[in-house]
Image 1 (cartoon, one colour):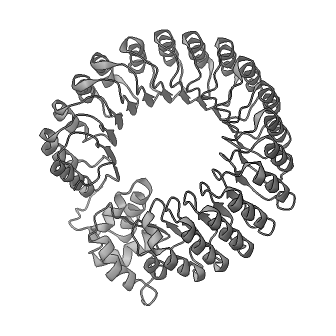
Image 2 (tube, rainbow, N blue to C red):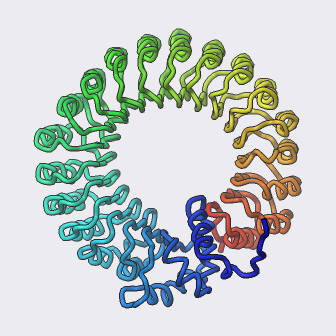
Image 3 (cartoon, helix red, strand yellow):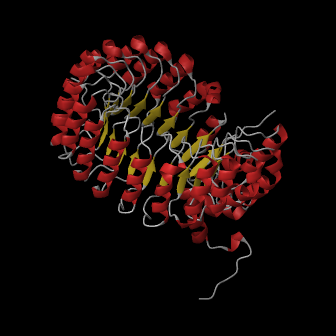
Length: 618
């Protein structure tokens, strides 16, 4: 088929340009820069962007020219409310600067505004609130972690009394305090359009949370409510349970980390047991104890809609776990279960393992920091041979020793469902790793294996890499961070890397030194797109393989090492030429101020990188 050479981007058909931008929009942030440099083109501005562009990102961490400037004097006027031209099609606005109200007024197509992690919002909160009073186009507003404090909370609350457009509002982690909570409560009595409200981590206490809970007797529109980390205790959770008698329409209720005791837990479980809408119950990091745990087991047993359950950090003992296990035998709805940080030992784990043989719903199971002995670990391994549903299993810090680890590894030969397994911070060593190597020769399901912080040496792990370089082509992610591989470990691993198929390898904090890191960087094949070598005493003598790897990697972490000014010039050149790298972490090395700033400037100018950890040094 004949091809036509295109000298100028303007020569491409509109449909082709739209497809290009739409594709870039979906895969990464490079579309920001793609348009940033194309905005000077009238053709793009008038014909392509209004059709294809959905998101406008304005951030101080990105080059200021020409996008922000051009929008303020160009697009916003040309396609603003007073223009005769077709309106811009922006639907989502992500901002890290203060002129948000001007964009509100000019871009009537915007429905989603993201201002999270942006403390400067506090300086414009009154103007923003005034704009929201009459704005009906914005349906989603994220103000998470903006330190709005009491003043900002009251300002937003006043806007909510009049606003009829917002459906989603995130006010999490803003330290609104008791007075801010009272203002929000008054707003909720007047507002009937909010559906999703996040008020987590605002230090409400009883004085702030009490009025909000009472307001829920009046407000029936909110279906997704997050009140976690607000010191509710039983004094607030008991009234909340009473409110559920008249307002039982919640789909999600987030009450993690609120010091709720057994009385509050029992009362809430009793009310939620018969809910016809609840799908997500979050009671993690409270004080439910055995009695509260029994009530939650009753909820799980009789409520057939709940799919997501968090009961971690609740001092659940054997009695509560036995009841929960019994409830799970016939349960067909709960697909996420978190029981981590509970002390139910061998007896509880054996009972839970028996229920897992029958359960056909759980997809994600978190048992991290559930201390048990060999009896419990063998029972769990036996259940994994039978269970065909669990896909993600977290066994971090469960005091699993070699014999228990071998049992779990052998069980994975028969298991055909688990794709992600975490065995971090346990007591395993060579025997367990040898068993896992044998498993990897046969298992075709496991795609992610994490073995961090197990004091593993290369003697224990070499068999894993042998298996990955020969029979196993399924595992894509391997995390061996925080072990003791050393320089010899890096050299040994490098022998197998060219024949492996995995794409993500994490070796942070392994004492690799430059010798081990050089071997690894020189041996990674094109399959590897994510590499973590942080905190490994790597110095400037890795320069050549490091710079070469930047041409193929997508994510690279070499932070907290001994890289210095000697490698900055070639490193800058390789970053300039890279078209694949989207994330680079390189902070906490030994660069001078000028070298640091030169690197930072180069990273900012690269059109593919959208995440980095360097900051300007003055």
